[in-house]
Image 1 (tube, rainbow, N blue to C red):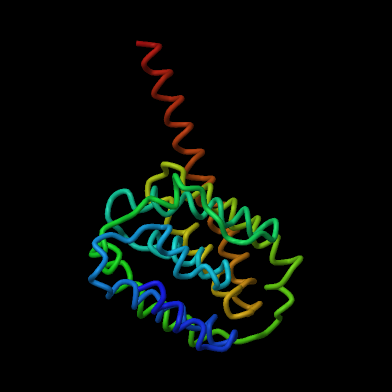
Image 2: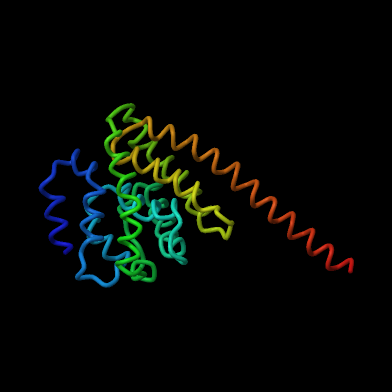
Length: 217
């Protein structure tokens, strides 16, 4: 299956290849020969694509309600990939993360929900203000994605959806060399940090209040 998907990627021009992420994901999800989809399998299938495609794969499921444990499986790779984007490195993940997997049926369910939105977003991409999607600004985008990935991993109720959406917006900008999406990602990043910061502050304050009440009683 990896060879078949890789063949599709090789047949496309670099510009088209960046615009066909949804097609690759659909083919993976529809392959019933695999009972489980591992992160290593996704890396092997998408390894010759832009790092933005890999980050999009791991971020997008967290935007929607997903099976329990999905954010734990897909959040850790985002931290590594965002760090590598920050320093201009090629995508790589340690075995302890790469060997994690989910049932193909669960992966297919996620892709079925995401596919219409992915194809819609891909149609909107245009090559404009491209310097915002290339080094050195691309490294700054990687840093923002790294911060978002760390926030995504925190045990904050519903705290993973907005950071994941922000990462997706950045990824679309990178994939389409579309600086407008990068600017939108920066705005989304700011909103995510304000909301996440407020929620975390509220949780910490509530925790101290609870401890204080316990000690007084």
